[in-house]
Image (cartoon, rainbow, N blue to C red; front, side, top):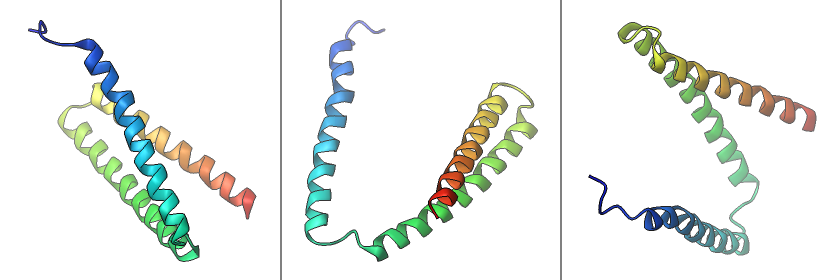
Length: 103
């Protein structure tokens, strides 16, 4: 089944893709910096977008968790979602602590 699979091509693809994405990101960031794209309005818009996205993700995880509990019970998917929920909320707590310390 995997006779034609080239592991070296597979393993070189991820670092190569990350390197190309990093180069593109660097040049687009540099161009944006010259055009003064990253001002106060930009940071406020993206701060609000992250806040809305965080709330949406929280609700989506809770809904998915409820669906998994109803459909599958306490199997692997439940524990994966529980772990994701814990990571989600712990990172929120750490972010809130850092933000409140800075302000």
